[in-house]
Length: 97
Image 1: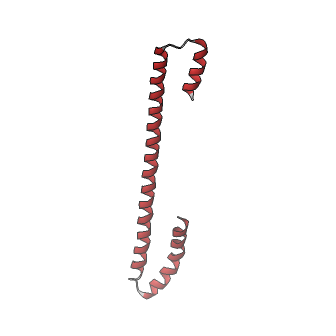
Image 2 (image 1 turned 180 degrees about the horizontal axis):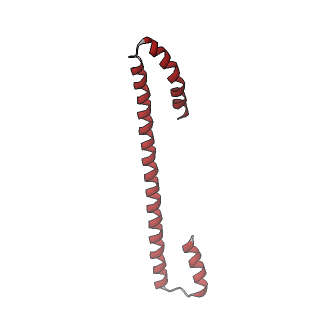
């Protein structure tokens, strides 16, 4: 956008010669290359964060499953008091994600 604006303003005050046109082409190419790199790195970082979030959610789900399996090892009195307490918390965690 700024290249177009600069070209429009300068074209009124200067005559076009081949050297100016070549310089403008080089500047435009460099600017668009930098823009493409910035966009590429942005998408790369977003994909990394998404993959990291999926990994953390899987680890949390495995921890919940492990907690339930270990709760079965508790004596029956403790098991009955533990499972109803932990169930609402886990159902909220699993439904909000």
